Image 1 (cartoon, rainbow, N blue to C red):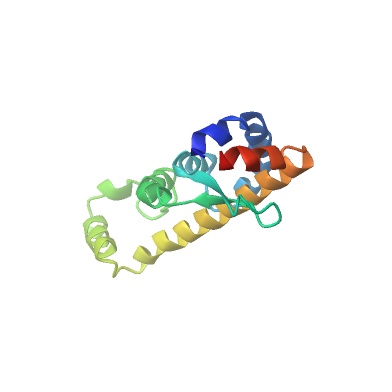
Image 2: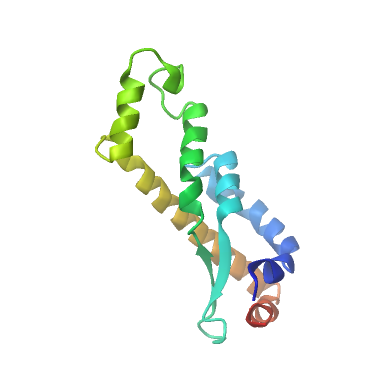
Length: 150
């Protein structure tokens, strides 16, 4: 039932899904590097594994919230914040004020992180659905579902 046991058994399928899912990532608000970081924090489970009809792969995003500040840093480092080419190290003082407002949750920009978290969760859910569809298509879903229960 450990995450790594059943997911280790489907490494090849995950690689295939990663390739086919690349278009979804390109159309998302995340760069490939940001998505890679999100995926390292995400874990997958099989909900209702004991019910062949209702069982489905779902993302556990508890750890994703913890890495979202790093994802945000990556975005800013890649030009996601167009104003101020120097990023947070600019000398106008606005960066410090904005950081304090963001930390307090009162800045206009501070609402961006929950939105990005929601977007990450939605993309992870679509990835999980794509992975399950792939496993069904390859005839491996039932085997994986049973392995998860053990």
